[in-house]
Image 1 (spheres, rainbow over the protein chains, first blue to last red):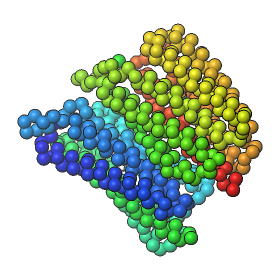
Image 2: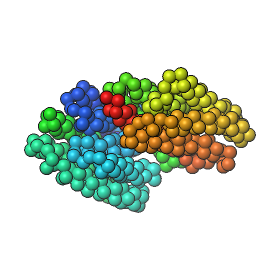
Image 3: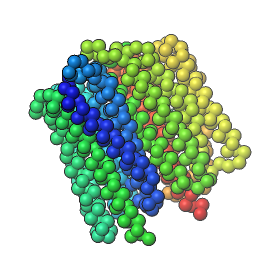
Image 4: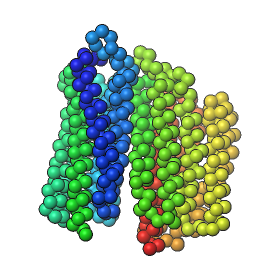
Length: 251
Length: 251
Ligand SMILES: CC1=C(/C=C/C(C)=C/C=C/C(C)=C/C=O)C(C)(C)CCC1
Ligand SMILES: CC1=C(/C=C/C(C)=C/C=C/C(C)=C/C=O)C(C)(C)CCC1
């Protein structure tokens, strides 16, 4: 759909700004991984890897946004490159959301076989949650079929609920095993991550309820970009703090 | 051949998703190679190098996929860039499969002249297996000639069988030389790698038996992408674990 100039520029801010934030966080994690002992290193490495992937995904989003529209008079007219502004995000999440669960679980206190099982099931649930969402939002009728959106959205929500419950359970069980300061940061990190998770289904559901005007489309892009920065950068900085505090406790 | 929108997007998910996973694994190996002692370092280095190659191969696949089709009405129509969606994969494998055998053998306990000979013959067999497969699937009639597919497929299978037997033999001989935990992980890694190897000849044989419709073409691309992630990332993470456990045993 065509985009008025102002709204086009708002989306530009959302995409490029989020890409810059992720790049900054990538450089930060790369250079601060030694602040954390080997025991919690997997958490920092997961954060580093997912920041790298997300940064490249935003670079692709930016290029497609830039080349996907031609200015004709006073409006931007889309071409085929503009088709992927949502799909590329899902492909990014299919890798980064499983890594986010690793990042969180690696600063919890679950260990041994139970930890391996929990890590595997939460990664699988996160992956399936995103891939089923991709079916509704991209593959079937380009996300404009309300029935497909609802059906695949509900399947995706089943994985979402499992993930929520499993992660909260692991954090709950871990809080008493660490010092007060680390526990407070872990609680904050978890609240931040799980509230940002709530944004995605809301944005996904927009085309079910309203006709996607340029203004709504802009709202969707801004919503996803802001949520991505909170879930990756904000959550990552807090998790890094937990890992650092727990490293100090272990000495 | 033309691709309907939905199937095009599924292939997009397979290619870009696999590329992201390989990039994440590349960043991970780069940042965790010091967790392993110099004795097993060659394994991690082989994994790092092959992840780098595969990541670039998927970047090329993604660019060709993106520029190889033009949207005309409701279908994607291919142009000449779309010819390489299989060939680029073989070129990637011709380098990465020999490196996969190095990665596996370097955490086994074969040493000295026997190790050098085994490494050389398995690398050569892996290389020849892929190059002969490339003949059938790309060079002759663009992989649409059933006779060429079968003849070159059988030559390739001869190398495949040698490789299988040699790798299983080396692993079998090594398992008793290490602790129980490392042995269990090495066994898992080998099973994972060799089962993923089974996917490739099956996908290769698809054009022998069926007419390659867009749906079959999509299945081939998804099959190769999933198998690549399992054989490189899944196997690599398990091998890294073996190397870490054996490092701890040696101290
Ligand atoms: C429940 C649900 C969804 C949930 C998506 C989530 C929870 C995505 C989280 C992404 C994150 C955290 C990205 C990090 O940067 C979908 C797939 C939209 C489809 C509709 C139902
Ligand atoms: C036996 C056989 C084949 C085997 C291919 C294999 C085993 C490829 C493995 C690739 C891997 C492991 C890539 C890693 O990412 C070919 C060439 C399809 C041709 C047909 C016969």
